[in-house]
Every structure is written in C-alpha cells, then in structure tokens.
Image (tube, rainbow, N blue to C red; front, top):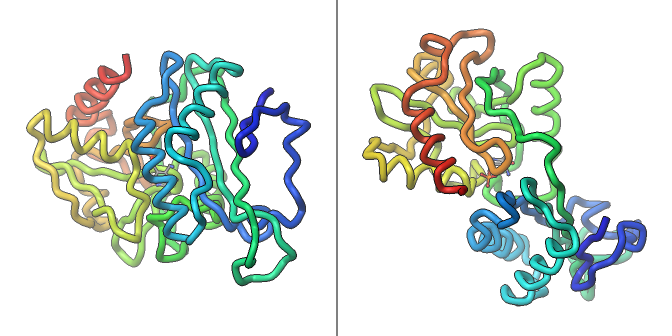
Length: 274
Ligand code: PMP
C-alpha cells in the first residue's frame, strides 16, 4: 500500500511517525475524508478549502500550494487506483519535544492514503440514540481530537444502533460523524453552520439540492422533541451520503419508513455522482 507522506509516495512501512509527532501526543492536527466515485474525487475543492481553513484556525501554516497538493493526490490515486472508496488525509503541527505551546520550529507532517470499499456503505434506514454533546466549542474545525465523537459512536454501537445524535441541553447539534436533518411540514431543518457543528460538505450539497428541488430550507436549531415529532429524519456525510433514520432513542419517527423528501434528496444526490 502506497502512502502520500508529505510530498513523497512511499510504502506504508516507510511512512514512520515520530513518537513526538504532536498529532500523536496532543491530537494537534486536522484531517479530511474525500469520497472517490468512479475513480474521481467528489467535491475535491470544497474538502481542500475546509482542510486549509481547519489548519488556519489552529494556526498551522499549510505547507503546500493547492496545485501541488492536487497533483500529489492524483499521483496517489494513479498508484493506488480506487473505483469506489475514499482518501483520508491528515496534517499535524509536526515533531517537537513534548510541550504544550506551539514549537518554535516544527515542520507540519502530512499523510494521505486511499481505501477501496469492499461493499458500498449501507444507506438502509438506520436507528440512532441521543447523547450529550460534551465536545469543545470549535466543532467547526475538523480536528484530530475526536474523543467526544468516538465515545458517542461507541455508545451507539453498544446499543446496536447506527448513530449517536448530539444535543446541547435540548438542542440538537449533529451526529457523531454526520450532520442531522429533520423534515416537518415539508420544511427541511438543520443546525446552522456555526462553531457547534462541522459544516459537512455533504450537508452543503444536500442544502443546494433541496433548493433546486424547491424544498423550503431553514438552517435553524431544533430540539430533541422537534426531532421525535418530525415527519422525517436523516443524516448526511461523505461516507453515508443521505441516510434515513427511522428510530431515535427507541421512538419511531413518523411511520418508521424512509420519508419522501429524504428519498428525493438522495435520488438527486446519487444523480450527481455518475
Ligand atoms: N459532523 C461530524 C462531526 C463529522 O465527523 C462529519 C464527517 N466528517 C460530518 C459532520 C459530515 O461531514 P462531511 O459531509 O463533510 O463528511
């Protein structure tokens, strides 16, 4: 398996990470996952914009030009062709003796590698549970610090459901690795893109499709009760696309089937991929 390690393509064994890499010790870095459909990156520019923004928000100087990074990613998928899968990439602040403040001199460390899916991720109607959003207040940064998300996803796994939906007080923010939408009286609601959620690339595609379809959209926070009383619930992410959620905390949403608006948003989404 070949890895893009900074600017070089190397085998996995050659890509050694120092024990004092700040990503390893502090989670001091950012990442992206970009879906590959039919061998082509989906929404590449939007993901690279977000990667650069995340890096800039935590004051890591982005070490490559956009053109060089794109050229290197193309080289990577030439070496490791993927039909349907994704590329994972991360950028850390670099290697320095362990100490909390930023090191005076450290070169950021970049790693990217691909994954071919053995089977397409399921988008069968799923179930979810609510969980307290105990994360920090900069969820807009796609940081390597995922412990709050990891604990939430494990909480969902332990209950044999697909997703954990975060709430702060009564207010729904997002899923442990997805954005959350509800439909009520033909209006689509999702949390506004502020510091409490990651502004998902899929979320943005869904909102633009909804506008194309003439679905009324409100980027407004809603409560747990609003979600339980809604007509449709779905989650969105790079890997899960648009996935209906039909049971939350053991409560059936509406008639317990994928909703009409969810289905039409996904159909149109799928249409953009071919
Ligand atoms: N929120 C969180 C917390 C996530 O981890 C993800 C997945 N990266 C998303 C939302 C969805 O983002 P995207 O559509 O860009 O994959």
